[in-house]
Image 1: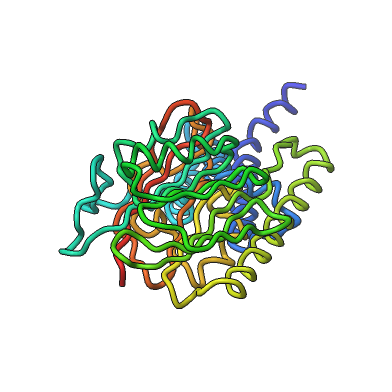
Image 2: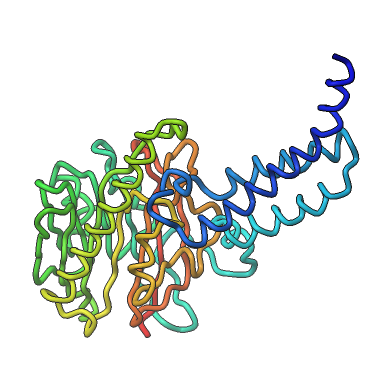
Length: 336
């Protein structure tokens, strides 16, 4: 019996390293290709699997002094730094941060400040946004039009406009006037054409995609099916919304902003539908911890702001606010 235990103990570091290496190969392949059938695996931030892989790699060195574990540890660390969404924003040094108060000019150009917030049904958005003085506000899960009106009254001194869609629980408020409001059927979305206080016209898309699947029991076959269906539904929704944008608005002639609650982690396949023609402001210039859900332990960046090619993002940041389980996202743009 003792000989069997000694034999198992001798083979343990090799098994741990082999498991860590296999997990690394699987993780990199799935996070690069993002196959829909493995959506339940890639719904986690890549560093979650990285922590598991690092633990499996470090144990053989701590207890057995296996030299190969150091190499595998370095490989995991490099992988996390290259593929983790959070690593990019923390690696930016010297980039302007979002400041409270009016958005300062950037390189001599006037800045357009945009905010998006899932209000969580109870939050007063005007209270959360007051210190940032945004020009455009996207709101989700706002059931009472009074909250959208408060944004106009308190942030824009009544010199603005808003549209609230009670059926979809979305609202848009702008420091200007809304020329057209085009609700999109079968989706929690608004298409809004606005004229800002300085005369510039923009197309705005306020998005609240299909709620995320919350079953994380990876040992359960039902979990994998739920996540696969959930990811596919969001892709269909966004494809439908983008088709309406192209057919019913002046995009791409006017600068366009797509923002809101995508209910998908930052690495999700759904964002690839946007990145050909739009820029994720936080991915481009964001600083600090950009994850927005859950407010108390933000592990996923599901609230995002995208600008079309006629807008250049210059600053972006996420902030914790009260009365909602999402964090507030701010992005500053200049016109190209």
